[in-house]
Length: 402
Figure 1 (cartoon, rainbow, N blue to C red):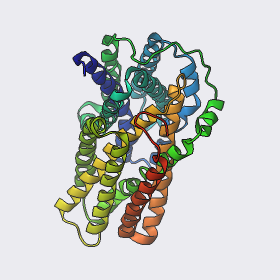
Figure 2: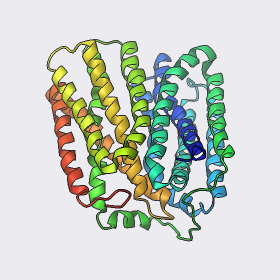
Figure 3: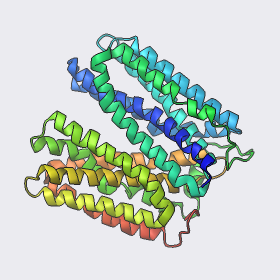
């Protein structure tokens, strides 16, 4: 690879980490702060509404596609949404959690709309910037940046809150978000895949994407690929609590150690996909998730040691980090020209919605059958997903649609 072409990867890393840190802060750290301020669990639960824009962002993705006809347009979308995002974060800092809670939640929703818009624009930017052979490495930057942002947003900022307080912390957060667009402003190389596009994207194109021949096979993969680990990820912290671990131990084991493993795995996954191909990577990465489920099933039959728990947690987050890269990479392969933002967003929303369903069901199942049986079911779901992949990829060729 030309050394100059590597410049695009730090650009993507900075843009993805910029959107991940505030999201992690608002969805993970703010509930902790609120609990310290004696907020009710109902109020804390209401905070989860801020994630709604990321679930429904496919509704305005066609609008962004239609108003993205040049590199200048893409830069404008990213810069404007990023600066607006930063401005809202600063604004939130001037309100008090105790007296202005509802207003703060409303502003957070607006901020997440800007963040979701920026994400659509950055995804288009990445798809057009990256050659097919570079997409796995580009998605390593995307996933790695997101996981790294989660570590900073949940761990570092919580510590910073105790030193700087609410107002100064959000100013610092906003400054970082604004600063993260600098690498993109400095990167001036033309987009590798950009062409003049006159197609008008409408909401009807959402239906047309799913109606294309063979797309139902890929949708099945999107629905089930994470199914063997989502339930474990959802129940991991309650499981550790029931084993007697305290909040500090759980925060380090899952939030710091686990997410760090995911970040490293995601950064390595790009090279693995480039070496062995997309189809083989899908099988191997899924086997890592299967191994994690089997390990949790095995150690949960007794009282697991600290070492075995760290091994299981590490394997679990490794599988998650690897999975995100391969799903994002193949999702980029399947976008239509002129519909990059819409098509990629649709595919990722499918994974989010299916993961949400599996997460909810896992909680209900665990109440009835216990952790060990849940972990066994997760392992079986991974095996079922192997069958789904075999069905979906029977005639698959690298960089081609199913």
